[in-house]
Amino acid sequence: MSSTKIFLKSSDDKTFEIDETAARASETLKNIIDGGCLDGVIPLPNVSSNILPKVIEYCKKHGGDNGSSKKIANGGVDKDKEILPDYDEEEDKREKVRVDELKKWEEEYMDFDQQVLYDLMLAANYLHIKGLLDLTVEKAASMIRGRTPDQIRENFNINSDFTPEEEEEMILIEDEWDDEWAFD
Amino acid sequence: MAGRKTTRKTHKPVIVDELRPWSELHTELLELIMSRLCIEDVVRLSFVCKNWLYVAHSLHVINQSPLLLFFFPLKNGKFKFFDPSQGKFYFDEFPELRYLYIDCSKDGRLLFSGSMDCMFLFNPFTKSKINLPYCRSFPCSYMRVALSCGATSPDCVVFAIEDVDEFRGVSIGICRPGDAH
Image (tube, rainbow over all chains, first blue to last red; front, top):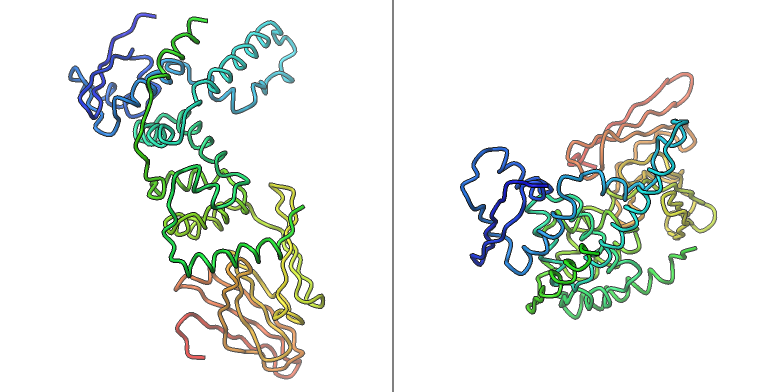
């Protein structure tokens, strides 16, 4: 599809090109485009040239196709299926293949370390790209689930800023937690 | 296939060496992450650093789906919670709550009273306790208590109505934060 080109300038003054349809995946960019204040290049002082291509890659995949992320959220199941008797099975199959392909793409796309995750999450938040924000937030949550505080610190490279006395107290609370709370 | 090739090409060069200040992550984003975790994970997360502890404290009651509470005053003040969203049971025990009864609950706090002269608000998660002036005229009278809003709010009013007996009718007691005991 031919579309107007938009230019984005990263925090370190590098310019990247993106199709207008792809840029519309970002609420922030969409508002700038619709607001008519488009003056050649859109400066993004919060996004570096390391991360911007990654963001653009996501937008290219999802731009002008807002339904896809919703389908994923519903597990690819179409709610109208039971209501419509003349439901197109072929269409259903194609949809399933598309959703599977997208899931696989997302898996590959999200294969990076916590530093990139941090920058990408901030960029998704700043640019209001809901699907990308959901993906990054979920990845961060998955790095916390079932982990001990020490493991979480290691995952995110966080140094504890509690005093030794506070740490002591934490350990006591943790032990108490383990002793008193039984999880099925 | 073309799509996959571009993926490889673009995501390889993303190499970022410096550490990221996760401990100072925007509150809004940390709250989003916490909203996807269950209560045990939020508790563990709050032990990671001071800022996360602060955010977890201000949030986890609000974002938590309601828990169903079973309380056994005669069994050493045993609590049993059921989390319907996780299908899990949690147990805890507060011997100091033995022989007391729950009169009402509001925003994570329970109002306890006993036949002896005590009445207080108790939060089973933080174990914090707020004593209330005792307003019961007769130990065995029939009493109902209600809270107007969360106990930490300065506007909170505790309202108690008590059916004393057929000659004296009902007695009503009201107290709010800052009232003299």
